[in-house]
Length: 437
Image (tube, rainbow, N blue to C red; front, side, top):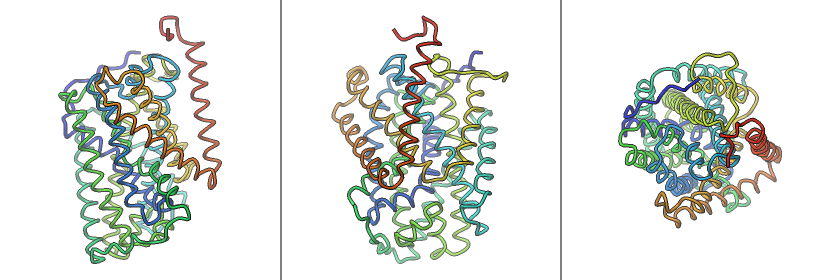
C-alpha cells in the first residue's frame, strides 16, 4: 500500500525548532542527569557543554546533507546517499531507529517516575511502567492526527517547558544565594575516564536534533531552515542544560543527586522551593516527556516507513489497513511498551547511547570518505566529530565493562543481529531490481 504523500511547506522554521527542542528536551535531561553526575562527579555540569560540542560537530554533516537532500526519510535517506542501498545503510538506519524507540521507553518511564513524585511513590512501583504505557498510547493517538496539530502542540508545549525550567533554575539558584558550592562535591575515582564516559549520556540530551531532518521535505525553505532549526535547537538547549545542571548542583550534593538519579530534578526542588516548587518541576517534567515522546515517534515512524518503501527493511501489514507509516506507529508502540515494562532507566539509557554513537560514527565516516565534496562538508569538522564520538563511546564502554558487562553483551549481540539480519533479508528476499548492485 502506498504511503500518503507528505505536504510541502507545512512546517515553519519555529515549528521545526519546536519539534527539535521538543524531542531533545525531555527524558534524557530529567532521567539521565543523575547518571551523568554519577560518572562525572563534580564536573557533571560541564558534561553538558561537552555533549553540546559533540552534537554541534556532528550536526555539521547532517545539515549539509539536509541542505542537499531534504527528505521526509531523514537519516534513512542520508545513508542511502552515502552508502547506496545495502546492508550498511539499512542496518545503520535501524540503529538510529532503535535508538529512538529505546528513547521512547526512557521517556515513558521518566514520565511515570516524575508523576509519582507528586504522591511520594518511589520509582520501584508498578505504577511507573503503567503510566509509561499510558503515555505511549496517548502518543500513538496524537501521531495519527495531522501535521499541523503535531507542530502546534509540540511548539507551544516546548516553549512552556523551556520557560518553566529557566524559572526553576533561576529560583533554585536564588534560593541558595547563587552559590555553586554544591558543584564541588566528591569526584569519581577515575575523574577523566568518568567525565569522558558521561559525554555519551549527556549527548542523549542533544541527539534529538536529527529528527528535524526527518521532516525535511515539509519544512518551509528547507535548504536554509533545516540548518537554522538544528543550530537554534542545540544553542537554546546548551544554555538551558548548563543553567539547570548548575541549579541542581547548588541545591544537592553529588551523592544526593546520584541517590535520586531517576528523579534528581524533582529532588532538587524539595529543599529550596518547597512543595509548590516540587509540583511545578514535576509539571514541567510531565510536559517535557509528553512532547519528547510525540516528536520522537513522529520522526522514527517517518524514517522506518521510508526504509520499508525502499525495501531496505522487512514489513508486514498483519491485516492492518492504512499507510505504512501508521503500521510503523503500531510496531513502535508495541516495542516501546515492552521496553517500558521490562527495562530500567539506567540500562535503557546505556543501550540508547551505544546505538546512537555507533550509528553516528558510521555516518560521519561515510560522509568523510564518500560524499563530503558533493555536499560541501568541511573535512576538519567531520574528523573532529568522528574523534569525539570514538572517545566518548570508548570511555563509556570501558567504564561499563567494569560496572555492567551485561548491557555491553546485549548491545554487541543486538547490533550483530541487526547487521546479520539485514544481510540475510537483502540477500534472500529482495527482488533483483531492489538488490544493491
